[in-house]
Structures are given as structure tokens and as C-alpha cells.
Image 1 (cartoon, one colour):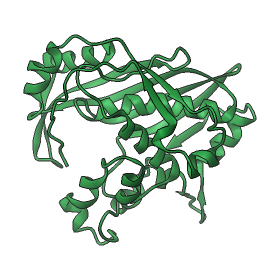
Image 2 (spheres, helix red, strand yellow; image 1 turned 45 degrees about the vertical axis):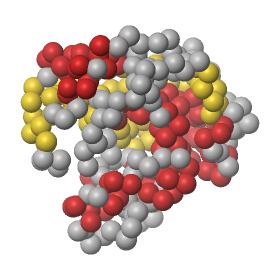
Image 3 (cartoon, rainbow, N blue to C red; image 1 turned 180 degrees about the vertical axis):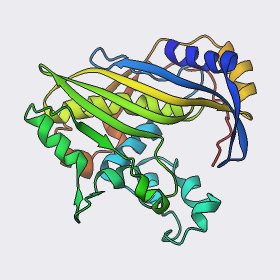
Length: 283
């Protein structure tokens, strides 16, 4: 929470107004910020200065790992985060590659699990990484990427948190995640949870210990219609102690994640929070 609140205050104090073409709104913006989470120590980075819908954040990362490309699939596991981008994004609605209602196109996990090869076919990046890590292999390039510039026109949204680089030291797994764009009041609340859970799950299914997760943010912003509630409400609240996340120990393989895992396999203990804040979402 301290890391999160310091970033929010930094944007309020140092941010520069930037016009965002996609949304038509101004953003108060800073460039470059680094967060870290000690996953091995169980330091779950959940926002407490407002109510967080943490299960939806976990559901979204599970959807990415499964390679989902449809908002209905994301809804079925517990998150509505892709409803607007799939069905209210004017540019996507007019895109000839859109297949109909709820279609998200070639996005995030769909890219990573079917990454096109220049000579034809595709590579399942996630399976390749899990196989390597399970054997204790680290080739310095165990990178799960959702970013494919040649395919942006095939999806409703470019990936924001686009790269996850796994590394092994001894028997411990580390993660470096990179995020090109960060809606700090809304998105970062989810993204911090997702980085933590991604490392915890990957360590669990590969037989390694969880180490630290390092979260690199590039463009960090607060939209103009989010500034007042952030400055005048959320930043005036005192954070509560961090809760503890419990993950079902029966999740042991990638196939488990792909087939039967639900949000009931994640439990939160000791979550105290301030009332929810209705931040506007920009499509």
C-alpha cells in the first residue's frame, strides 16, 4: 500500500497533463516507476484505501493463462473487465476482424499461447516456459509476452502489462513484469494482484519457491475525471494492514489452471478496506 500511495501522490504532485487520443481525455502523467512484491513472504499487494474486487483481478489473469479471446469466457470465470473493450470500443466495433458480440480478437493470452512463427505455425510460450522451469531450466529468456505489433489490428486493445520474464536463482523463482501503460486509480489495483498471483502460481506448478516480483511501470497516469476522487478521497485515507492470500495447494500443473481452477481456489484472510470509490473507466 505504501508503494501504491507514493505513486499516486507522485502523479498528483509531479504529473504533466497529456492528451490521450484513444479516449479523448487528458491524463496527469509521470514516466517510469518501479514496484516490488515479496511473494515468498506472502506480502499480498492489495489496495485497502478502497474496496478492491480482487477476485475479478485473479479471474482475468487466469483467463490470460487460458488464452481467452472472448468477454463471455472472462465473465464465466468471474470478471467483466473485457465487456466494454469488446462491445463499446468504437474502433473495434468498426473493425472488419471483429467476429461479433463479446469478441476481443487476438489479445493478451491468446497471443502468448499462439504466438505466430514467421515460417508458419505458432508457439505456446506459456507451455514452453512451464516445461523449462519445471526442469529447473532458465535460459535467460523465459519470457511470456502478450505484445505483437504486427497483430494489433486483430484485437480490441493493445496489451498494457505486456511482458513477464521468469528467472531462477537456486530453487527460487523470480518475476519481472513490464507495463507500458497504467491507469493508476483503476488498472494498477488489478495489475499488482495479477503480478503477485502469476509468480505464486507459476512457482507452485513448477515446484519452485516464490521469490520477489518486480513490476516496471512506464506511462503512469490518472485520467482527468479520476483526479478529484484520488486526491480528495483516496489519498486522505489511512491504509489498513495487508491481507493474506491463500491459494489451493491442489493446483499443481498448467492443465489444472486450464481446466478446473475457479475463484473458489483463492481465499483472502484479514482484508480490511475503506468504502468503494466509483472511478470512471475510459474505453
